[in-house]
Length: 102
Image (cartoon, rainbow, N blue to C red; front, top):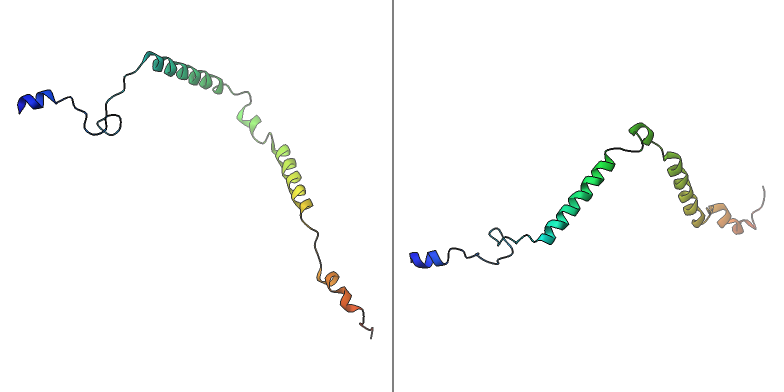
């Protein structure tokens, strides 16, 4: 029994690539290069984002006029598609043909 336990102690229980007790993947040189490249890109992004072109005060409300104009254009386009109002008096005016003035 001890010999069997000794020989079988490196067994991965269940499916070897998923689960809590899974087999660790070997890290290849290509994976290391990809990780280094991603970290360098992230560091460069962090560098450029740490020095904004506009200050927070300049950035606040800088596009308000453009957004308002775009919203007005959108409202006008929707209103152009909508049919004009139809009043009840206009719809039923043909019934007043025989109406006499008192």
